[in-house]
Length: 222
Image (cartoon, rainbow, N blue to C red; front, side, top):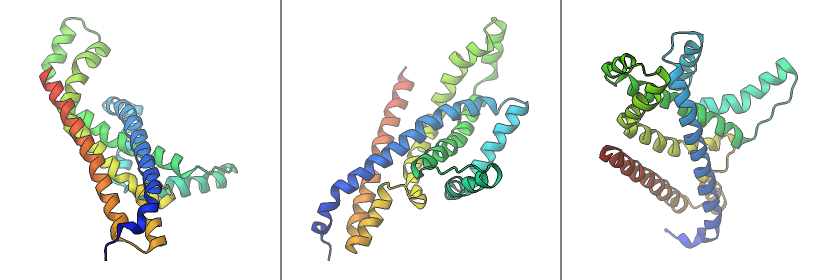
């Protein structure tokens, strides 16, 4: 029998999990956007830095997020201890933040690169003919158009990131999904906490989706 009264006392516990989930998603989104922007521009260069960045992007796009979290949180400290003799014990939140930033940046870099390459090359040639510096036409002409073109894909990546924060529970981050598991283990109730968690994820991602649509509409209007 469904009985939500059994989990009323855990509502504050769930809310704390929501705050941690939002914090992790924001860190990943902001950090991933900044690093993704840098990666997106660097990966287009045909030099050593471009090759390194493309290697990083390929690795983080080609391996599961759960592997990346476990490898960084458990594997890297063991390697550091073995080769350097230094005890490196990152917190679960730190490990999750680092991996979500890099993982998100890898996908955003490819999205931005595709957006830049979709711009008519005639605009670049015209800017060069007028004597506009490469940094200026890239910053003021190319990138704004590229971001506008790929905005739906960027918003979709942020929504995916918010949902993927649940994977951080495997290294001990006490986010929303892990707290639901804890409540289940304490009360032996499965349906009620999971339903609340599912609705919470839906609401968060619906808000993010609507914000993205509003921004997209505003950019089209401008």
